[in-house]
Image (cartoon, one colour):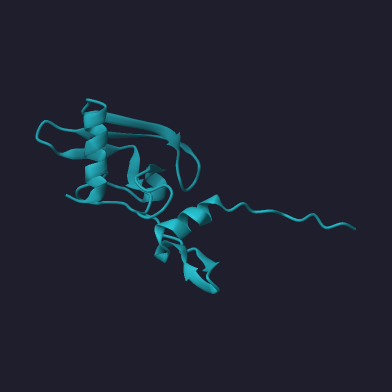
Length: 127
């Protein structure tokens, strides 16, 4: 079982239900959408109203459930088992550490924690 199904299974167990519903804006177009995940008695998973996907691993939003409307996900048949929709591209963030530009996800946990604590400042230009 892949990680996405494990996360969904955990949500069904946590909420003691065979139906989960998300009411929020589409991650792509911003239109309001209602997406429903239903587990049938035979264990088949059906997604209605759009697509469910997850933020990439090794990011702040890892395991966060994201949704898209049917138009943005390009879904004709919303069976996640047959047509999984993971329409995202992970962004590689580089920053300077120890004098070198390196991808942040390759840093050790301590350096990653320091990066998360950094604050950005904007210096106002005086005329």
